[in-house]
Image 1 (cartoon, rainbow, N blue to C red):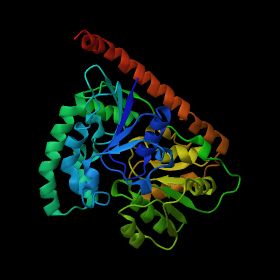
Image 2: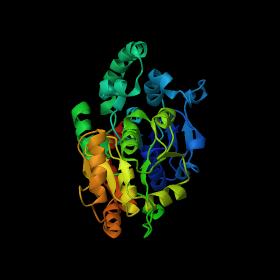
Image 3: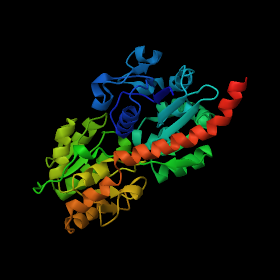
Image 4: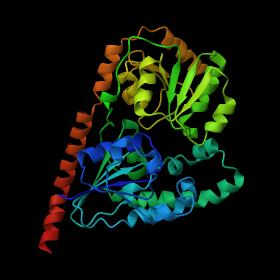
Length: 372
């Protein structure tokens, strides 16, 4: 069986790209089709992959300004020639779910989320602070993308959602049911430590919807040490907001990130995520997470047992959650045990079951194609 993987774009390193690396591990011979690629930010688990980019790779400034070319992604994804493959697995948070399989083949979409900037446009515009002129230009593009997103929702044979929140969104926006397979935690990367240091930790891309600004504002008020690992377009603005007790570490190698996880008081997770693997990486390191109580946190954080949930994205609510966290005597072994439920074996079993279901659905089509 010939397999192809399809991913939106590979110019950033987040949770979706870690999942793609796991899919590559399951299907090492499968080529990865994507619109653009920046090898400087590629996860180590993808460096040996056969990655095939589109014509968009050659557009001027595409790696730094990929959003400028927003209207080009839909046709580019639909234009990938996947006729030789029996199974197409798309890893999609925007466009990849629209990949077109040949007649008789299977297409499984692992959906990290339906497009945030299309289906949550008002909040997206508010967070990104685009300005009135850009909003007026972008609005008709978003409307066309929303229509395209609905039209191409029938392309996958089976949807796999990364959380119960995303499964509900798939049902709402696409009218499709989905299996739920949680992203895997690379448990081997993390270990607990008996020695803790006096700092809290954020591990995140520095983009608006991650709400790192909320963590900075809260720790400005608390005066407690906060380390922020990660980079992104909001770094400059966040550094201007921060007081001296908040330090920006930039992007770090995995081994260093794991060390900071293991020695922190807790990991702060202030945004509403579709899943949010950071919470489980904290638990795998024997540390609790302080998370905003919407989205994927409901699947990963047990309030008072594996972390603390706060109910409002306000400085007061987050500060109160930090105080609650300080009052708990956390058991690192139990936190690690919780994370182990989300291991790579569970992910592989879930994906395999989804493939088997899709193949059963495809057999009648294959029979018809063979008869023709």
